Structures are given as structure tokens and as C-alpha cells.
Amino acid sequence: MAIRIGANSTACSNDDLQSLGAATSLGICLTEAHYIGFQGIELDHKFPCNAKLLCPIMEAHKIDLVGGWNSTELLTRSVADEIVALQDHLALLKAMECSAFILAETSNAIYGNIEITLSKPSVIDASEMTTFCKND
Image (cartoon, rainbow, N blue to C red; front, side, top):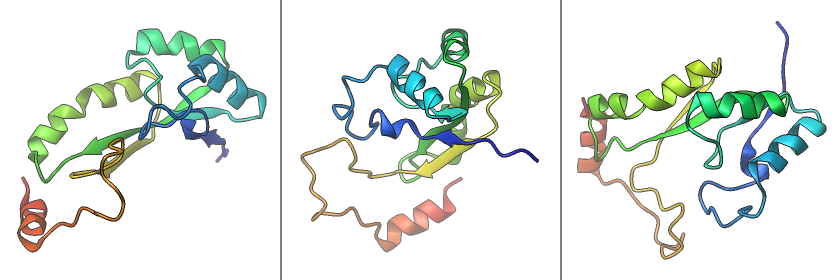
């Protein structure tokens, strides 16, 4: 099995606080990732979410899509709703021939909200944990 090395695009921009790296274009990020030897890169907010738009961009920069993050919110949505919500993301990854689907539960996440400090962490209480574990 061949091993290929991909990068997370956080090195160029940040999904949690989008002002970080805002001046770096997607083209620059892809060009530099390819130049230093990465064979692929993970999606971020700068990538078009349409394979017909994204494929030629990736081909032009000679770099593949190696993954794409998807957040779930199982404290506020059902599993069925989450499955519906991730269909467009799955379709994009499939169209881009990307086999890595990155999923993370992010209910009550504070990223992107600079008004909430880390000194006030979100804590799941026992009833929320029960709901989370029984969610269908």
C-alpha cells in the first residue's frame, strides 16, 4: 500500500476564526501545499462545495482532496436529521474521489465566538448525556 501525505488547510486559514488567514487565497494555499510536497489537502471554508467548481481548481494545482470535516450536533438534532444534513458533504467527497470523511460531534461548541471565553467551558450534564446517548 502506498502512503500519500496530505495537509490540513488550517496552515493557511482557520475555520474556527476565519479572520486568521483571511488574506491567504485558496490558490496560494494550494500552490504552497503542492510546492512543499503535499499530495493532498483537507477542505476548509475557502473551498467551493461544488465538485464541478472544485475539481478544476484542484487539478490546476496538482493536488488532491484528502479529507473533509463535518460537524454534528446530536444534542440538538436527531441522528436522522444529521444523516440528511451530511449528504451534500458526502456527495462532494465522493465526486472528488476522497475516501476520508472526518466527523466530529460539536454540540455547544464555542469556536468562532470570541465572546465566549475558555474559562466558561460548555459542560454536558447528566440529562444531556442521556439524551445524547439515546439519540435516534
